[in-house]
Length: 206
Image (tube, rainbow, N blue to C red; front, top):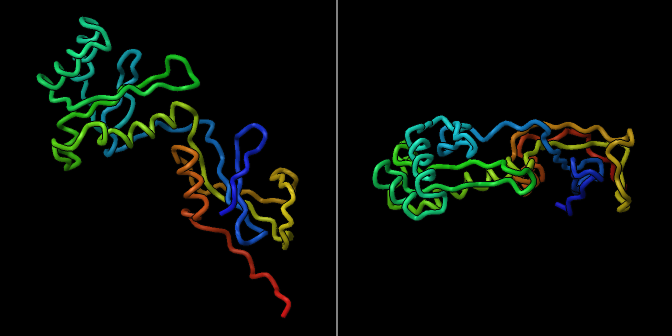
């Protein structure tokens, strides 16, 4: 897969393929869904501590965190010790947007979620939450994408010229959304993970 090239507003990117008629494409999702599902640890908006995603909710933990930070402050070392001792919280992670002020979530590593996932209690919390942290960072930073392709059946040679997907010669089709982070989206689009376009084989000259 060749280098990915962004359009002028960084809303869409393409990469050339071995077929000059086909490009891999990713497009930024303007209205993405929050990360959700059983695999995600309990997550709460830091402002107000309302549950935001994941099948697992643990409002007692969120309320205990709120009480502890009001009493001791957010960065006091007694907060994680208190949550671990009385609520079985193995750790937690605050994820903040790099582009939106005060746009933050807190993710709790709870015993209940570990039991549900079949994860040993000895597994480091930093590693346990790493995937969730990366996914939430992408969501908070507007880095959620769809993947797909663009086809131009008449383009039988690639001379390295600039490509404009909006020039009327390309047909763009986005096939799947919800890819958190441009690296993940590019990898999946480049491998045509959600299918690929079919074009008649090009004629070759013997």
